[in-house]
Image (tube, one colour):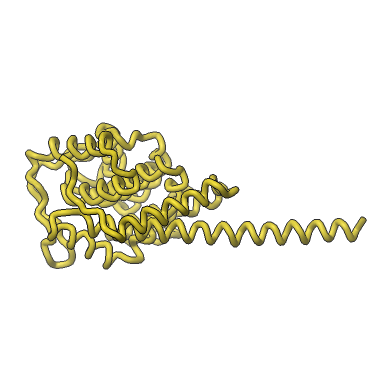
Length: 274
């Protein structure tokens, strides 16, 4: 069954704007950013995603973990960072349409951090935001069917991938198939699905935009829960994707302009010496 949502004017505007920006990326000379940029953004992605889950490690500490340096930090938080960095490094090898790879990734991400890594939860859970129970997840006995159905939607639906990635992210949060790690895996898988549109999405730190707007992030989830459809969350997430792409394009334009100025200056200096 297709997950419920409604195409709104805002969704249409965002899809059009994002598609235009992806066209600019494809037409430009910056389709694959330099390694230093990719490394920086991988750290931003890991840091922001873990912060959304309450991990208190700083960006500097996570960089030290990546570089295998000794630091003082909570052992479980360090293990979260180690697993997340490893998964981000290997994520491009996963098939975004494979439930088996989805479970494999959860095991890599949560091994030693929850009691059933790589397996669906075996009991009922409620999702708590602050002091309130925001959502009661579907019964454990329905998880296999619900997740198989969601992956069938990914494979078979003719919806644009932009929309499917957002819907999948929300449905993962709603179904809450694991005891822990649902949010971080949902964010990971959304990026993996988006990378099927353009590989640049593997590196753009969308998680940072979610962290910076976490109030709106949780509000969109709550509205979608109350309406029984992912529309509000799809609207929210598409706007963040649009913002992230816009910032990337602006950054690359500034770098290209600075490089051009440097090359012209260098050429003038060589001309004067001659």
